[in-house]
Figure 1 (cartoon, rainbow, N blue to C red):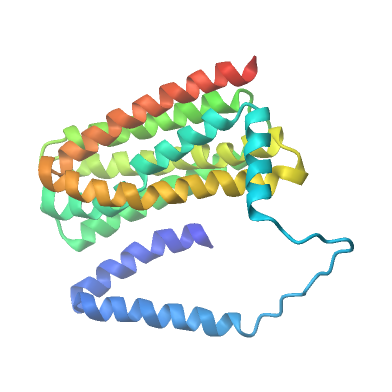
Figure 2 (figure 1 turned 180 degrees about the horizontal axis):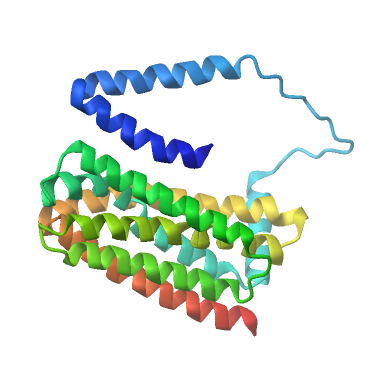
Amino acid sequence: SVMFSLILSPAIAAALFAVWELPYIILLDCFGTLFAVICLTFVSIPNVKYENQNTPNFLQEFSDGLDVIKTNKLFSFMVTGGLFSLVYMPIFVLYPMMTLNYFNKTQWEAGIVEILFAIGMLIGAFILSRIKTIHNKIDWIGIANFIMALCLLFSGLLPANGFILFAVLSAILGFASPFYQGLQAIVFQERITNEYLGRAMSLSGALMVIGTPIGFAFSGIAADIIGLNRYFIFSGVLLIVTSLIYFANAKYISK
């Protein structure tokens, strides 16, 4: 359902842009959120009681999660994921701007790019789900990271009349995404016991979330200063660096 939402929402958004002004579209989003909240009020969530349940201590759980990550040699792996998120997440905001401002296309073309990304992600997720065994998962994460880096780099190098290639690169970027995100979660699941898995995953997720707003703020300023296409080049180069760090992590963890 999430994948179909990613495919349909850009097309619907493009259609709304053609007939409505932006404030009304944002208002529609508010109504959608309100509808979702109302639906949740009718959902019954059972309150499970555990025997001998201790009062949670945030600092202690944070420390335990950090210790288990270090013990399993995943600290550098986690930090690299945070660096990746810092560079990669702002790209989603800049993608429509590339279509509209750099390639001088309309909202329809911007929607098409988003749809192709979602279709590529759907195909990648399907193929990943059909693979029974994947050895050297961190190497594969590095490869997916490297492919995504090249997509951004080549997107920035395209001339203003290269929109079709930009759309193709968007589909390839979407195809590689599940191999990065899906395998990253599996690495934690395989190396950390269930007792500490939630703490480790929460710590890793928090690191990525914290870096995201910083990346958004920096990307907007940088794109204004050096230009959208040059920022894509800059992001691609930085992600090549993170892919090399992943390959180094694979050798370190395998020891």
